[in-house]
Amino acid sequence: MALTPTRAEAARFLGHAALGYNSSDIEAVRQAGFDAWMDRQFTAWRQTSHWDWLSQRYSPTTPGVTDGDLGTSVWRRFIEGRDLLRQKITFALSEILVTSVRNNIAGFTGYGGASYLDMLEERAFGNFRDILQGISSSLFMAYYLTFRGSRKADAQGTQQPDENYARELLQLFTIGLFVLDDAGNPVAVDNSFQQAYTQADVEALARVFTGWDADIPDWPGAYARWKRPMVNSPVNFDSGAKSFSFAPGITIPAGASPQDNMRLALDAIFQHPNVGPFIGKQLIQKLVTSNPSPDYVRRVAAAFNNDGHGVRGDMKAVIKAILMDPDLLDAEGRRNGMGPHPEQFGKLREPATRLVQFAKAFNMKSKTGNWWTDRHRVWEYFRNVGQEPMKSPSVFNFYRPDYSPPGTDFSLPSQERLLGPEFQITTESSVIGYVRAMATIIGWSLRDPNLECAADYSGWLPKASDATALVNELNVLLAAGRLSPSTMALMTRAINTMPMATSDQRENRIKTAALLVMSAPEYITQK
Image (cartoon, rainbow, N blue to C red; front, side):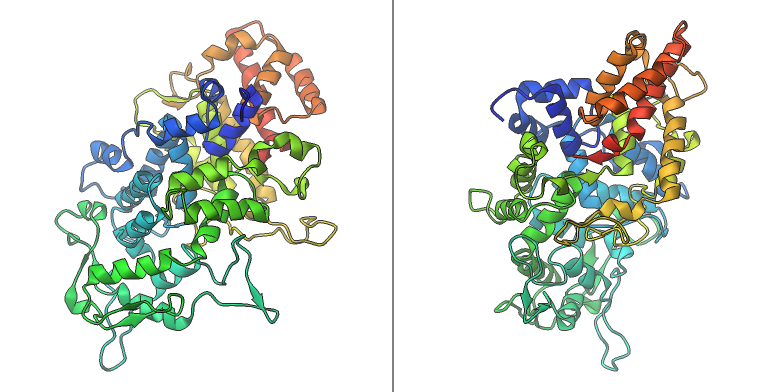
């Protein structure tokens, strides 16, 4: 964008590029511009890792360092982190390359989840091929998708390699079920879609992942094993030749080392033409819109295939292609009905990001630095809305990228099916639960000596006396200026009925205004 973005335009951009932001972040984007802001974010300081933070606060032999403790660190990083773009991409990757502590798959899973998130953070701005290496070498992933300790087939045929990870690596993490065109749509031949891989491919890939296990046994050093890449036990490894129908002409020769097996298999998958549109489209859905235009996907897939310097899989190029695409930046054109189906553009704001956005907007702090949010019902919020980071109910994430709400008007006059992934966790109870839980969290204040973690409203108190100005400011900060005049007028009238003689009363006006904005449909639907 050649001209300096308005505050609303900068806030809208940050709504797609960050989990949350504050007024200073809006000004930073305005001063730098979108492209230069991203360049700065690519080198922004990464604060204390999940692993280090947990290690500093818990004994290595502390039992039960699981979901709650990891969740506290996730909440901390999301709020404290100044690497806004990295946190957004890490969260998106965690919902595509899914693992979860929910099923308590092994002891000390909090450390396992911490190591996995740290790995995604470290590689978020690198190359997607390195991300594939990271997830395939992760002990936490190996526990979650059950290929840890997988053994080669025995002579009697009573033992077979575990196929779980091999199948999900192809189906969910890289190429998908069907052959795709460069816009991410399945290719039909004779009115049927072409399979991208076969059961024989799954079986061959499962053989690649035999013999891999923890570098350190359960005891001693039970928790340290989560941080180390797995090692291979040759006695359990299948060293036979392997080939794949999705990579014709490529064969892993008999006798190749376990490391070479993994390298060659991941290289073959990475080079598949599906990967760019398959991953690119999901990242667009996570960051920008549920129904990207075919040309939008093509442009992002092209950036994945070649960053302009002959490099495939460069995440920085992919991220810039997503966030600098004309489909995102030409907001005025969409409002005026220009372009293909402007009414399709947008997405439902994920519940987890709504909470982070509030926390950043109102400078939420932890008095001790321990972020003891579990005793303050933050995790009750996540349970109410059906999305607690790193606690997905299955490898299919909290919601599917191809989900379309049944029995709704998610269709155009042409009867084209529209997608609404986040609507899969949107129910009557989650909608009500969101507002109730948000009211509780907004009600906390750092002025309360009994609260360890809460929002800081002190800088907002001078703004409380003018209801119109207060609502206008929150409309830009939280909703990127999307609230309608009628919605803003209704909110302003409500705020004007509230007293403002004392500091507590003025703070209540601010809290009420924030809750009203964050409950508005124009805020919850992101455009």
